[in-house]
Image (tube, rainbow, N blue to C red):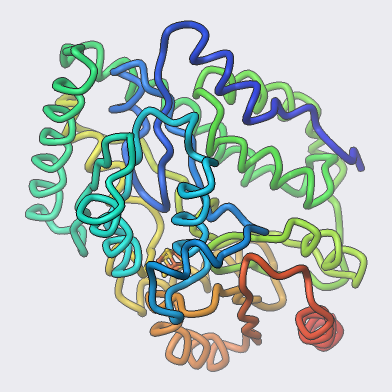
Length: 364
Ligand code: SF4
């Protein structure tokens, strides 16, 4: 197994991009149109927390039962961690992120403009219409802020470039078992999509796929699906592998739920909306529990996973609401599961390791 693929560092990418006269947007979870920002020469760089912050600064603005991703976002801004960003983008993923956008816009008033993005909670034609118009309004806002006005042709070219990067992301997923990468290295590579420009990610993904060996399938004693929001700390993945487990598929908000398919429309705003709404089921987009269950069962069958680990962030309502029914459905289908709740500021705890370790032993 290769330990660490040479994934460019986030700070180097941001510096290089800004030195060329471009801007950077700090983007909060989960769904947003990368292509729209790139058309305005803005690099979206995602912020999932970040983990291991002192949350006390953010805690002054929030109720104690708000998740650590949002607590940390406020602390990160207040302590200068987002000074490098020219814009803050907050999709309406959940009530907590909606609250974050309101606090920033109405009370904190950061130096950067805050751009909320409202997402529909379904995938009907009317939802696609709604998101199409919402993306048009973000486009108008960016026109005013950047002084640029990309044409539909330029937008479409950016959409196609993101589609090429996402096609490679899906290919990495399909060829996972043949890639000579430990889970830690694989997720470093996959999660570099959170900040690398699509063209850089395309090169990196192609170089990794060239090293796939179709004849060599990595086998693990306890193959699992990892579900949840984000696999932090990354040492979790190494611990799973040391306990005999391996992540053969994921249903993570930062990874598997964002394998966006190509859009169909030749109209760029509609095509971006189609891509987001046609991704895998996600509770933050209002997907029915039955769709999520079917998706997990399909994943378990195709990846030959023996069980599902729900690795959840404390107080994450969209995730936690679905869990009882989802786990019951999995159990009825003969797929065992376990739930672990964490705070992204905490180191990997013995409690988590014991719980996950016992589950891995049970499903071997
Ligand atoms: S962890 Fe859950 S509650 Fe927190 S920002 Fe993400 S989706 Fe919202």
